[in-house]
Image (cartoon, rainbow over all chains, first blue to last red; front, side, top):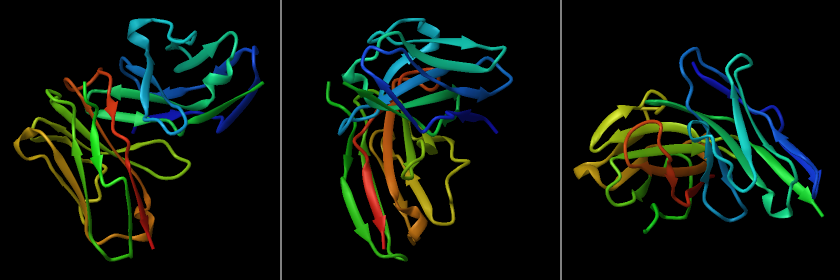
Length: 107
Length: 114
């Protein structure tokens, strides 16, 4: 069975500090990976997907097949980045979310 | 564009009772998903529909859970009878086509089983 692991339940940083939210997956095929975000009292929404190689709200994520990782990074955290972040692996009809990491950005 | 709609938003029942949740996906979205999210965990896929056909229900506890998507549009998820461990947020999501696509989530239904 597929597994998606987000080792940190909570990540607390100060505003302006770099952020890295870790995601590791177990899958032997070609992975399709996504990061979803849930801001307070809002719906879960897509942040970015690896296939598009884009930067959204200053966040980037690089797929490392050798380490089976898809870590989410931002060089300078902002208070409005405080939210729950979920890594998801999508393999057709097999969709698996990680347990989530709560990011708290302190002023 | 209207988002995914779910109702009710909150439901409190006693164990062994039955409950049903409703989801209306974004117009034109062929794929519909139901997830269970227990407090402190990530969403867990229960069932996935492509139009009105089931693509995957391998994680649906079929002895008590059932879901249908008649006419390939809205969907209902039922629990009968409910157990204490069913307390969770039930999320519905939709996407234009199956796989490799952005999922659009509804607000969820928070179920408490007493």
